[in-house]
Length: 69
Image 1 (cartoon, rainbow, N blue to C red):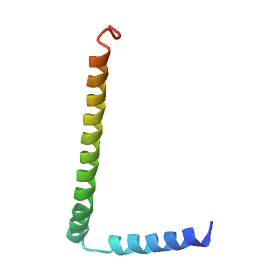
Image 2 (cartoon, rainbow, N blue to C red):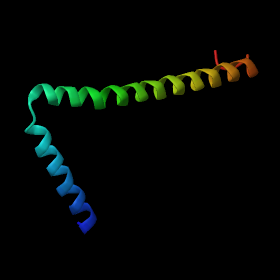
Image 3 (cartoon, one colour):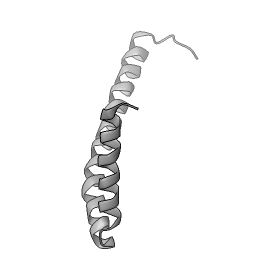
Image 4 (cartoon, rainbow, N blue to C red):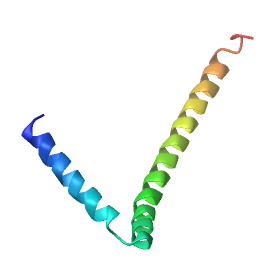
């Protein structure tokens, strides 16, 4: 492994150790503060992807009305 990756691993181990030693309600609060925005952005990305895909299918069906049965 390169020295850069070893530094990242050491940093992550420190963060993990710090997090696991916190009081449980504080761990839950941090988890909520991090996961809520991440889940919101993922849901937004999925929503926009599905909207674009359905629009593409709708346009394609309008162009080729004699498509597959």
